[in-house]
Image 1 (cartoon, rainbow, N blue to C red):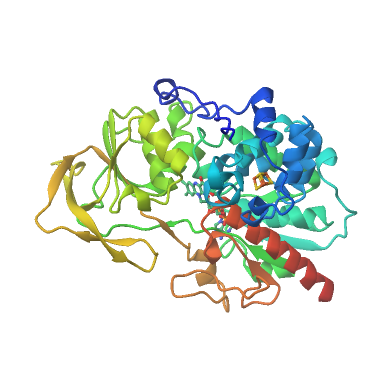
Image 2: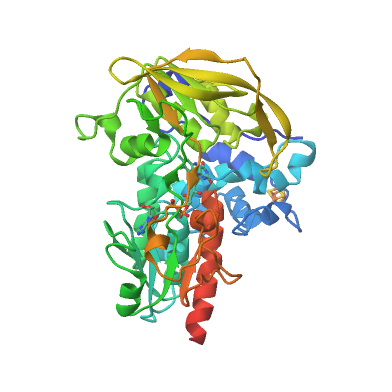
Length: 458
Ligand code: FAD
Ligand code: SF4
């Protein structure tokens, strides 16, 4: 059985010194070889694993005929962000996991093919990739410009609605811009996807915190007939242990926002300094932890230790990212948890006291629960700690909006039609409990369908 064509990548010793892309993308010859591996199944299991139900054999067929122009049309029928999904979606747990070729051998590299189709057609006119109907002048407001908002807004635009996206930050894209680093998702790729939506007529109003700068009622007063809330879950969790307030103990959000959004890696050209640790400890096991660790390497750290309380099998971070991190010299210290951060006389962190852990029975997350091993404490010396312990929903909008119901953890409650407790107000993405780009996009799509249905009937 044929082997999948490996994605070409830059050498670890070279790439760890800069923020350029790690994976360089298939050549045409590599794309053709990979596309021709697809069996064009009559009942394609891969599609069942895709949250936005892309016609996967359909776009791959066009690629195998070296016709990316038609391939991208098939993709754009279901996704407005193929260059992004091709790079950051956890395909190994979704479409590629279901691919029939994976049962006895290696699945088709669906994500790498999607990326090829999007990159090679990036400069095509929007008219040649989207079918847009006539404008109907009905106004819909989207709050938050991450993948959920862009997808919901994009689908509404393509059906003729007038879409305005309100964003609290000074730039668009949500986590795609401020969280995921340049070496995984270049800003140029994100800008190309967003520019296509702007050309279709999507309006962006930046630096506007809905809830504070304007309320939902203000938006209804401005003649928006429906609202989609996609504000993500950007509130960092903390360990609540001694020493967390010491200098040079960062939360991953602050660290990544400073580096990615504010471009502190290019200081002093960009006026946002960030501390550059020599011996860095990152705590966590998700994509955010791996991104923080790999960013610290690129900022010049001599050693980076990734401390995680479970084993690598339970790590939520993508396999490819874990492999890349190890190639770049990051040391995985698993079954270990910090219990205390220790400071020097100037109030800066100088060490982490850790405890060893063992795995017990599965907990509510379905993963085996980590249990501390008594008297196993030891000290790890460090001059910088980055905490990547997960994110909670940001409470600003929900706390300032009367009658917007949330659950006990702060996620906005929605019904089966994606409508919140307020009529005409819908929600999706991480703010209702999603945790990947593609799940945010899937919810954005479903919400758009329901918003159209609501607007037709009200
Ligand atoms: P977000 O992307 O969080 O966007 C929400 C937007 O709303 C933000 O721009 C925010 O500024 C804005 N906003 C918030 N409040 C307001 C307000 N009141 N008014 C106006 N605007 C507001 N997923 C993957 O699938 N693959 C990955 O490789 C991956 N890597 C990740 C790496 C990192 C570092 C992080 C943090 C997450 C990663 N994820 C990954 C998760 C993924 O990025 C999120 O699930 C996804 O971005 C959620 O999309 P969203 O549209 O719901 O929200
Ligand atoms: Fe092609 Fe695999 Fe999908 Fe079959 S399951 S259509 S082989 S990608």
